[in-house]
Length: 78
Image 1 (cartoon, rainbow, N blue to C red):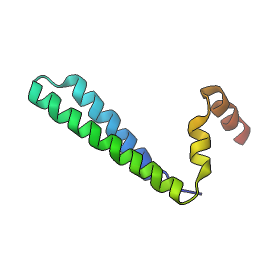
Image 2: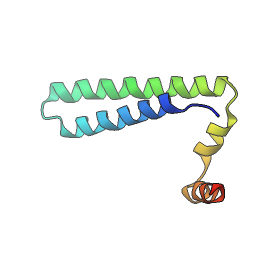
Image 3: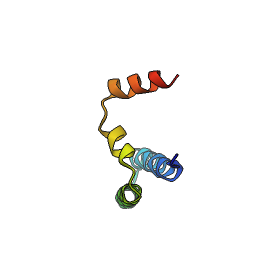
Image 4: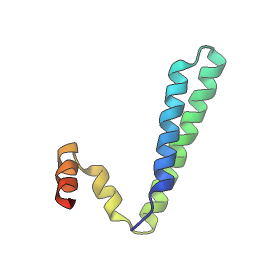
């Protein structure tokens, strides 16, 4: 089983940065948050490429699923 913990952490960090951007009050802080978000997105893209490079087709398959398909898969595990 592959460990997606790093990717999960990056995505959570991106979510927090987006919330900080929404709360930013000054133009300077907004510009800084926009750069942070761009950096996080780039890092997430690199992480996804890394996961693909170690032949993890499951990730792409899961990402392509609709919400209903994913829920059906998860229900089948139980």
